[in-house]
Image 1 (cartoon, one colour):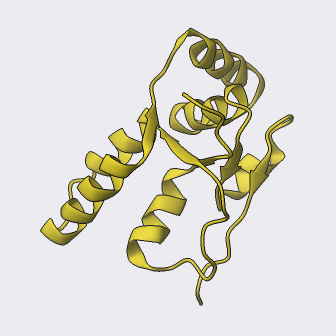
Image 2 (cartoon, helix red, strand yellow):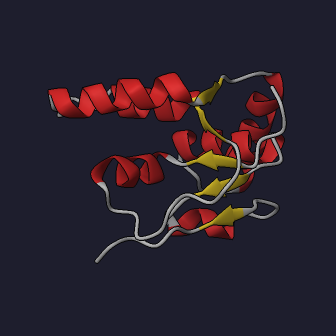
Length: 123
C-alpha cells in the first residue's frame, strides 16, 4: 500500500453518505479501518439505498486490516486511554499508517500523538 494521507472515521463516512458534510473531503488519499467496515455493514437499520451506497463506497476505498503493528498499538491505547475498542483500532490504524484521522469524535482529539482533523457538518 502506498502512503496514506487520511483515515476516515466511521462517523465521517456516515456524514458523507447522508450528505451532511459542509465541506468536501480534503485532497489526498483515503482509507478506512476494517473496523469501520464492520460497524457500517453490521448496522441493522440500513435501507437498500444505504446498502447500495455503502457497497459502492467500499469498492472504491482501501480497507486496512488489523496487522500485528495495529494490534500492538491498539493494546497500548487501551492500556493508556479510555477509548472503546473500535475507536482504539481506528486510532491505531491512523497512527501506525502515519495518516491524519478525519473524525468528529471529540474524545479522539485528546489522544497523544494522533493527528486528527474535524470536518464541518451542515446545520
